[in-house]
Amino acid sequence: MIVWAALVAGIVSVFFAAVMLMHRSLYVSAVSLLVVLLQTAVLFLLCGSSLLGLLQLMIYAGAVMVLVVVTIMAAGSEGERFSDFSFPRPLACLGLIAAVAETAFILAHGTAPAAVAVDPALQSQLGAVLFKPYALATEAVTLLMFLAALAIVPEKAAA
Amino acid sequence: MNLTVVVWATTGTLFFFGLAIVVLRRQLLAMLLGLELMLAAVNVSLVHHAGLFNDAEALAVVALVIAVAAAEAVVGLSLILRVRRSGRGADSAVLTELQG
Image (cartoon, rainbow over all chains, first blue to last red; front, side, top):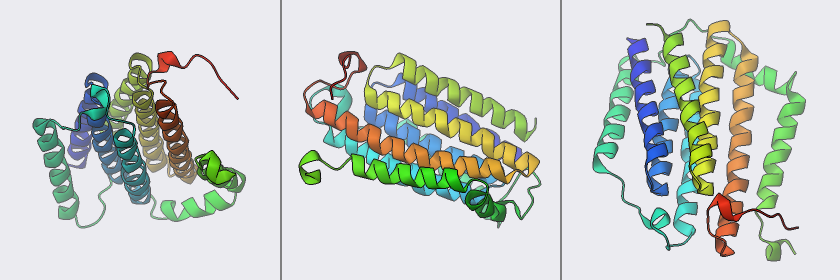
């Protein structure tokens, strides 16, 4: 049953990735990427990594995609690719049905369902790995995010 | 059919579509979305690997990749917005020179 749920998530994500490639409108591409990221979060959950699924939802599907959509809106109104904010209704229905079905499946299982026998201590080891053997990489990524925040400050504000 | 087959098929197809978007589409924003798609595909395979082999290091790499992708999206989007507001359009073909 869990494998079939993973199959549904995979098919829906591949379909919306194809929409991203084929559709002219950047808004449709961005919303399709949002659906793909939601489906990959479901795959994370089915692979036994609920923490990273949550991170995927919060950072990718939440923050980054909002930023992308706002950028498309702020980029100007000239040109069809930037000004078309209509999303095809059949695609919206398909994404919604997939999301509702997967949520119902997850709720029906009570806890996070996993298709593989994951060691319960695995996710608690994540923090230990990040701050012991990977501490330098974690610090480097933190510094990178800080520099990214500085890099987008406008020149006048920086002066 | 098992989960490994499903995950590898999904990962490979998503990565292929992301690569095709980066190569075939000319808008900078669409290319950035294709990059994000490729990173998401790689993350799925890493998480599956972590679950199969109880490898916490793979999960750590996924967490780092998510953070780097967020930083990359912020910088990329601000650059795209700046290029577009400078009047040079949003196609990759017009950006042929770097200026300090």
